Amino acid sequence: MGLLPDRKLEMSSVVANCAMNRERTLTGSNGYGRELGMDLLTELRGRTAGSTGPVRWLDLCCGSGRALTEAAKQLSTLGLADRVEIVGVDLVDYFAAAPHPAVQLVTASVTAWTPPAGHRFDVITCVHGLHYVGDKLSVLSRVPSWLTADGIFAANLDTAGIRRADGNAMGRPLTAALRRAGFTYDTRNRRITYRSGGNPVNLPFTYLGADDTAGPNYTGQPTVNSHYTPTESPSLDEAAGKGQGEESVVVPDHQHVTSAEQAARSDVEWHECNAATQRLPHP
Image (tube, rainbow, N blue to C red; front, side, top):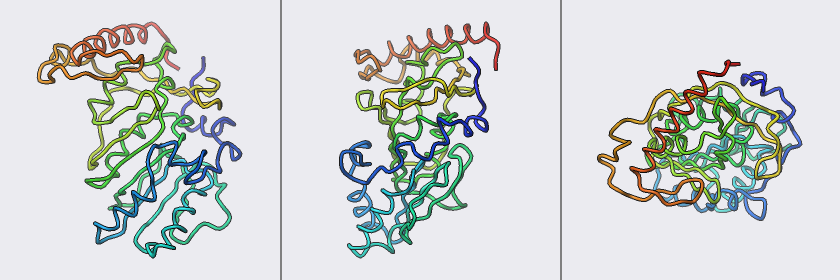
């Protein structure tokens, strides 16, 4: 298995595909609302009521930008066009022919793009875009620093697409690290969310490269697997469950375990993964 760096990955036909599911709408059976489980128009309207400045929405891997333009038009009919700023970022310059004036569309890789200095966003979304990103965890680690203090990030994430050096799924060490960093992961719907931004978060994994031959994931579309090696073991306090209580957590196989059991399992899997990494040549 040959792993690609992001620069080469972004030239792959799996990733740089202008015809791939890019006409997603704001609502409906193929809409942002259904995929993210949130009504974006209501979210943006509600935030304008309590804000003196502009409400900003950033959409990563925005496709043609159709959903963004729909939102801007509906906000215009409500007299809110000048209260909301919408930014869409996508790797492929294949945007809608006539975007709304309130919408800015940017051609860039989401692993390299950063907001203008001083810009924070009230809402950040990524609808099925992370499936095609190489360093997925780098994006997730940076997004919280782009949010306002009460901002929200929502995206689709298939944790099966985040793999160890030996090709096996990262599993519980990943979901435990995401939870420790403040993310909420919905295993049933494969959605990840983060609330209340301000600073980047630390996800203790080193990116090795991506595999664009992974084949279809749960969406039925060919996607990209991202490969990592852990950079640290869970602490002894975490393995013992100290300071965490015995709250129940949801894990990918839908079993209920205590936080102490979860942390102990993560510790064992980390050592297994690290041993496997040492035996394999790095790409």
